[in-house]
Image (cartoon, rainbow, N blue to C red; front, top):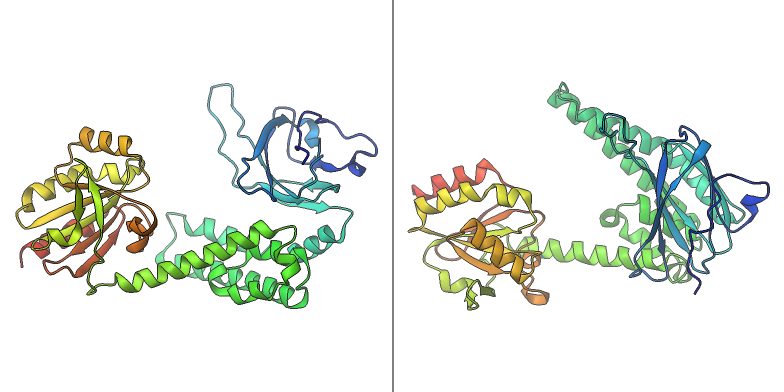
Length: 380
C-alpha cells in the first residue's frame, strides 16, 4: 500500500491541479500569516496513527496530493495566530473533516465555518446534497448552544435553547434515517450515520444499510458504531445492577502493598468506592476534603480508592505523594475492569455502600452533595 505523502505540497493552485488525485483548498478568510494543521487517517488500517503536518496557506490556496490506494480521512483545522505581544487567538471550534477516496480529486472551498466540497464521483455529489439539508439545522443548534452559556441567560431561556438543540438534533437524525431508507446501498448512508445519527436511538437504521456498504469503504466506521452500541447496552445493564438498593457487585483487586483485597471482606462499615486517577484534575483537587472527611469518620466508614487509567508505578507514586490513608486498589482489566461493572460515566465517581453491602447512592464529580450526604448518613 502506498503511503500518503505530504512532501509534494503545492502552496498555490495551478491550472489542472484539481484533476490530480488529492485535495485542492480554496479557502477564504485566511491570509499569509495563517497556517493549517492537516491530519490524515487510513480507513483500512484503523490502528495506523494519523499522518500529520502543518502548512502555510497563502491566499487560502493549497493542493495536497493523495497517492494512497486506500480511503483516507482528512481532518483540517486552522492554527491559532500568535500576536506580537506573545498572546494567541482562541482556537477555532470549526474544522474540516472530509473523506478522500482513492484516485479522487476533490476541491474544498469557502470558509472553515461554511465550506463546500466537490468531486468527480457520485459520492461527493450525494453527500453535498444531503449535507445541504443538515447544515442549517446544525448551525441553528450551535447558535442555540452557545447562547445557552451566556451568564445573563435565565433558567427558562436556557431550557428553551436546550429544546431548540434537541429539536435540531432530532430533525438531523430524521433526515439521515430517511436517506438510509431510500439509499441502503450508498456509502454516503454509512458515512452520514457515523457523523450525524444517534447510535443509541437510531441503531435499527444502521442495520438497514446493505452488507456491501458495511464491509466497503467505511467498514471501520461500521465496526466502531457496533462496538459503541454494544458498550452502551452493557452500561445500561450495569446501571441496573448498581442502582440504589442493589447489592454492590463483589470484586478483588491488588492493594498498594501487593495483597489482594475483596470488597465483601470490608463489610461491617460504610464503604465509599472512589473511582479516580492521577490524571484527573478534579480527583486530585478533592483529596484534601476527602482526607478531612476520612479523619472524621474512619471508625464508621472506609474509603476504597480504585485508581483507573494509571500504571502501577504512577499509581503508587501518586498515593505516596498525596499520603492517601485509606484502602488503595489498582483497577484491572477484562472482568476486573471495575468501572465497567459499576457503570462509571465520569471521574471522580463515588459509590456509597451500607454496612450490609447495599448501594445507597452514587455521586459523579467532585460535589459538595457528597460530603453533605456523608454527614447526614453518619448522624443516623
